[in-house]
Length: 241
Image 1 (cartoon, helix red, strand yellow):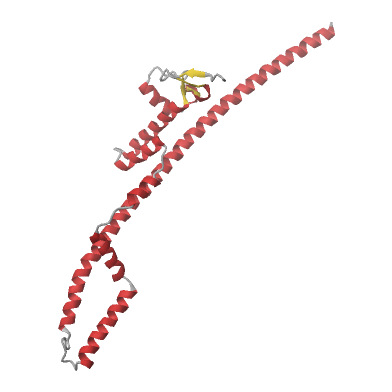
Image 2 (cartoon, rainbow, N blue to C red):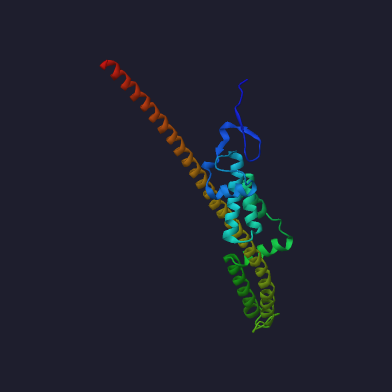
């Protein structure tokens, strides 16, 4: 069994794989300040693990939000929890959108849908035409509702009085759904922006780390070159002798 090399974190005093070892010199100053608030003795010469650094990156994002927005609302806290747990928001939002409608809400939606269609306009126009024709031509304007059609006017007024608030109920519920969708879009956009910031932070860390490695390689190459020059000088001196 191969032994895994570990190191001891200067922040938590816990052991982690050497592959997660990160020097304080490679941490951005803004994040380093957050770490030092919790552990003042942590310096640029100290070490911590990548998982611990990710925790402080999330805290840095939270501090950034507090400065930009002020007091965090439920929406911002939900986004931060999603970042912390590394979960997606779309699954939660889809679950919230599937609301159970009451019988009255379903009726209001159907009335609003039918009342705003050409089917309703054509059907109601035919109903009025048939009503007028029956009373004027078939019953000789002496039927149950002769001209000026008082009963028909009463029916139309009653229908309008009932239909208007039912349609308003459906529209109000639709506006509420639109507001919820707006909140969902805001949360998704906010999370995307914060993830981009964290991605920039990680890219900066990788660039700094790479620069350190390149500098180390250059130092080694310079040492090798100096060693080769010394050998060449010794060979030249021996040949002269």
